[in-house]
Amino acid sequence: MVINKDGHRINFMLGDSLVLVDSKPQYLKHPVDLYQGMIVVPLKFKEQVLDVLFSVKPTTAGLRKAPLNLKKIVIDPGHGGYDPGAVGKSGLREKDINLDIAKRLSNLFRSEGVEVVMVRSTDMFVPLSSRVEIANRAKADLFLSIHTNANRVRGLNGFEVYYISSTADNSRRAVQSAQNAALDFDSSCFASNSLDLKATLWDMVYTYDRAESIRLARSICQNMERGLEVKILGIKGAGFYVLKGARMPAVLVEVGFLSNSSEERMLRNSYYRQKIAEGIFEGVRSYSQEFVFRGL
Figure (cartoon, rainbow, N blue to C red):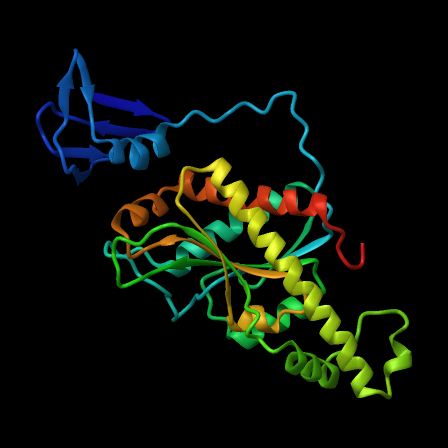
C-alpha cells in the first residue's frame, strides 16, 4: 500500500513491521495486518505519523478571529550558536527547533499587526543577560521563550509551559529594579528620591506580572490541547533566569522532548512545528481577549 499526499509518501507491506515514511525506515511494534478486508496499522503509528502528515485542516471560511489586544511582543528562541541545547538521538538540535517555531510564531503575530522583537533571528549565541536586556528594553506586552525539552527518562513526552516560580523573591527583585531601572509610570517622578517607595511599586508590578504569566501559561496549554493531539503536562513554576529578569508577563514554553524518539520524529516535521506555533499563537489570542495589558 502506498499513500501520497502533500509531497509525503508512505509505503506499507502486509505482514511487515518495516514502513517507509518519506523514504526513511520506521519499525512498528506490530506488523501491518489485514482485518475484515482492511489494512490496519498500530494506533500509535496512526496518531504520531498518519494524523500528523495527512490530517485535514479545518476550514476557516466565513469565520472571523477576535483581534489581538497586543502592540508588541518579544519572542526568545532558546540556545543558539555554539550552544545547541538538547540533541535528539537522530541529531536533531534544540536550537534549530526553537528558532524555526519562533519564526513561524513571529509571522503569525506580524500578520495581525503585532510588532515582534526577536531575541535572535539566526543561529547565533545570545547570553541570558542579553536576552533579558533585549526584552526589557523593548517594553513589550509579553515575553515568550521557546524551548525543547529533554530528560533521562526516554519515555517522558509532552508539552508544558513555565512561569516565574513563587519561590522567586519579588521583594529582592523589586529592590534591584528600583536601584537599576526606571519606572514606566507617568507619575513616577514623585518616587525619584525614595528607594523604598520605588521598590514597593516594583513589587506590585512583579506580583501582577506573575499572576498574568500564570493566566497566559494556562491559556496556551488549553488552546494547545484543543488544536493539537499532544500530551499536555500542564503549567509549572520555575526560576529560569529569563523569567526572573523579565519586567513583563513572561512564560517559557517547552514544545516537546527531543529525548523521546516519537516526539523527536514529530518535531522534525515542518507541519507539526507549524501547528505548535499556531497553538501558542491562539493561546496568546485567547489570553489577550480576557485581560487588559499595561500601557494599552
